[in-house]
Length: 186
View 1 (tube, rainbow, N blue to C red):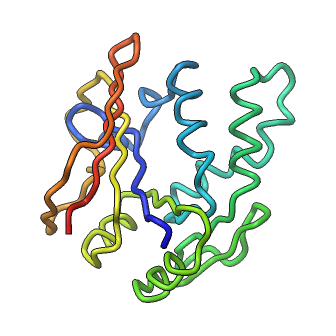
View 2 (spheres, rainbow, N blue to C red):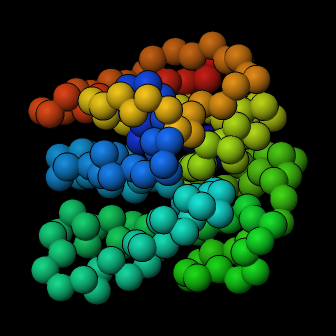
């Protein structure tokens, strides 16, 4: 069975954006980007909320940017080669290849997808991931923690759930960014 992994870039105070919805502070430097490229290589399907999907759709054409560095080209290829499912009640058609739109998040359909998938799945978007946590679907949490406190914004880990975690991997980068991977204990 494939794992469902919640992968997020967060501030030290646990937000994916600030109170104004901005997240420029989260743009990874090259060494972090390369690490995340390797992390995403094993992902076969990404589950996104609409807002995160709209941000991530940049990667559909990032390889066409003149002078793009090799790690950007690499991630663009990784992203384009994976399947995407976008959960949205407002999006009518996907803007990217290998993408389908689902109107609602169905935990049983995701459970079935985990059982049939040959590669792990990643979930992104705080609200969507919150639904998956409440349904008991998340197997791992991977946080890239940036050395910044934003003072408010969208919390990466939504309230209303409790899970015990076991640290299974950690890495510190040269500019103070930290990666932590946890297994969600049953």
